Image (cartoon, rainbow, N blue to C red; front, top):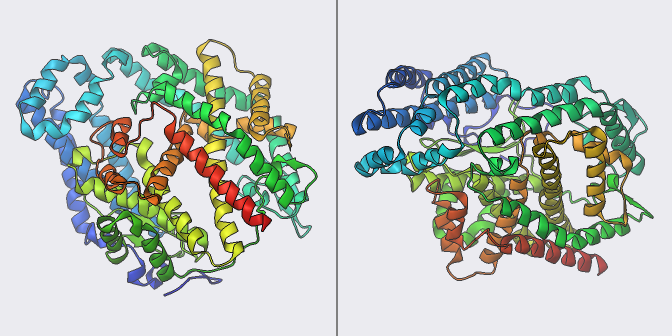
Length: 604
């Protein structure tokens, strides 16, 4: 079967089984699903009954940990089935209900186990460590238990924690308020598209309009969109300030030195890493300035504005790739990772990991998701474009990481932290990009691949680092007890754009209000992970492509490490020490090398 492009999407039951994921490998039927569902419900009641006794002695502690592990593992399996079935066709009521019930069950489990961490933190750590050391069956819990104990000096009393927990929904409401305002209440008016027809400007089509070859269209979209944010600047500053204030108060109560330190504590990341990223990116901004200047020349513009930054400068490539062709290309591109990786990759294609094509009411986008006891499934909406093939390589990176983590670790040590989650996928994406560059038969094909790589670095390293720098500023102000005002933070963001875009780019004044429309700012200090992840992936990909001795084997061992240790310790397997700037420097080198090739090829 090749592509499914038609006026009317196929229904789910019209898609061939060979093009669907093998969801029956999780549960053959709903009766099997319900057996585990009832078992979880019974286990939750047992867990509740252990609340007062689970730390009495080693045996009760062991009983609780094993029961909790079994329950958590089953919940993840049940959730995988319910979520995948719901995503196949979101209009089927029984699967909507199944998914809803699963979310309720997980909430019930979370509430039932909420006593665990506070009680462990109230207990003498030496007692708990002794329990683990004396029983081989508990060794797999050691890292997670020690991780809980790490929070002891940053924890409050049981009653104080209960009060904060009770207020958690209120403290997080500023994000919901901002979402409702931006997604529902704010209206951006209309503009004329490339065909001179009136179209409503929305959050959904804004990014598409910025890609317009018609400069008038992208200018109007940019100006009008941000003007509306300016009209709501005081309200949106208030919601953003509330998020900062909530984190700042919590951080101080828990005896952290700053909001940044508190946010990085989960992954055991020092604040110096955050600062190093910003420092290295600043040092390499001249290369980004050069990138913008090349775009200006290729677009034949007298002035380069911010709204010119997204439009493509290269000839569109209409080449199509059947899924069978995509499979072969991805396999060849990733064969450099060795025999063991290739064997597992083949399993993904042959054993029902991948749900390939769009169908009526199927969830949009792409992802990799599974559990310890299921396949690491991949949802695609494959339509034969180059980006679809690259997405396939990306999602396979996630699935291979999950596969190796699950195969080589106990359930308790299998889950790798979010800090590491985008590395394997981005390594695959880069390896695929370099392979396709090497295989490109025409100048336009090669330019297209190089251009896409440059855009990835621009958006993922440079832009996300700019966001990270802005976040550091607003949270530092809040930690110092200063009030965030709309004019102050918008002006800072405007000046920050000047730094990142350089003096040869016209910084349109409306961009100041972009500071108020970034959803990730309501999840503080997350965006730096995107920039750090791509930087790490750049270092890994370069060493693999250069055939650095033993590096490929170290990388596979990294994929097998799961959640045995903290991210910075796991990265040492592949000779990465993030206490220095080596990795960030390598990412900047890759950007410059790609830019140099892009310029040279354009000049031919």
